[in-house]
Amino acid sequence: MTAGSEPAFTLGVEEEYLLVDPVTRDLVGDPPEALLAECEEVLGDRVSPEFMRCQVEVGSRVCGTVAEVEKELTLLRQSVADVARAHGSAIIAASTHPFATWLPQKTTERQRYEQLAHDIGIPVRRLLICAMHVHVGIEDANLRIDLMNQARYFLPHLLALSTSSPFWQGEDTGMKSYRLAVFNELPRTGIPERFEDFWEYEQHLRVLTDAGVIEDGTKIWWDIRPSARFPTLEMRICDICTRVADALSVASLFLCILRMLWRLKRGNISWRRYKTLLINENRWRAMRYGLDGGMIDFGRGEMVPYPDLLEELIDMTREDAEALGCVEHVAHAREIVRSGTSSHIQRRVWSEARENGADPLEASRVVVDWLIQTTLEKVGHPAGRAGGGNSEDRR
Image (cartoon, rainbow, N blue to C red; front, side, top):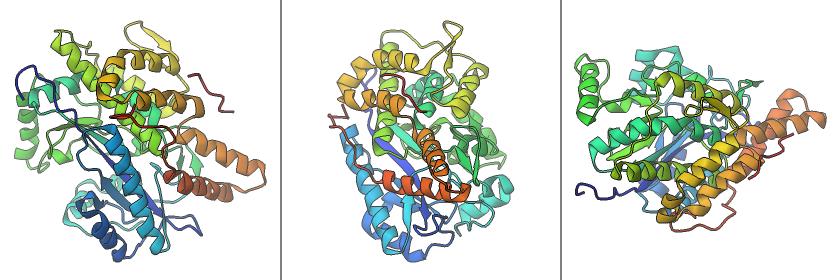
């Protein structure tokens, strides 16, 4: 990559699914070893175990376009679901299970996971949560750090579009993303600090590795980080989206934000870098209210409805969406605002079941049924090269 040339802006997405029993709708706490082995036969290194045995992690190939990511995610979800079905299970794409409890869950017997359990204790045992991670290819290490510093501002906006964890152990948490409340118990999480360059980041990382606290950067679990394995900037704040179309929209918007920030940098313009204190306030609002409560526009110094912020963001990144061919995928964010995220719909399904006479546990099982069905729904709009409202009545 020559100085000033455009980064690759390749795209990769990782997702984590929960295995459920389609009869009881509870988690499959002890799936047969053959299930993962058969997934690996079909998908190779694009599938791997997670900390909990009831979880399966997948990762797309490196994709040049969002259209390629769409094919990858559709294939990955369907392939894992097909193998799970052969073993009497189903998969759901949700960041928490509506009623399952963490205490009985079995952990995967791997040295890395055993070490995590030893180092962190109960907080890591409570990690019955799933996420979506989006990697964007940026070859220049210093540029990765510069864009990370600026992109921190937009992380709450992306989280709000992805929320899928309103329930925890059978209770409505009152939050749109309870997953992050669980994840926040771990060290080295949350919004990262600002670093001058990649060298400064490595120096701070080396303090931890030299002290024996961590082995490498894979145990830095910030909401956004320079990947320790790939030349990518990895966005980690988001819940896993139940609908593939929503996942593609969030990934596209993140990609376009990074290209927009790179484009501004090329013109000697930088996004204002706000203190972590302020960004964390919007992060909390995204966790608690999602799309509904508005966020602080720090430039104006006032609360702004989320639909208005989204329209500004779509307008700011329009040139980038056109260059990357993902205009329609970015525009799908308006549909998320109109119809609600997975968290909105899960609550709606639960409430309707209760109105129809179901008890709380039965209503939660109906939510699982919706998650099973929706996880495998095909994308309902055409895809461009990289993929391409109104405020909704959520009742």
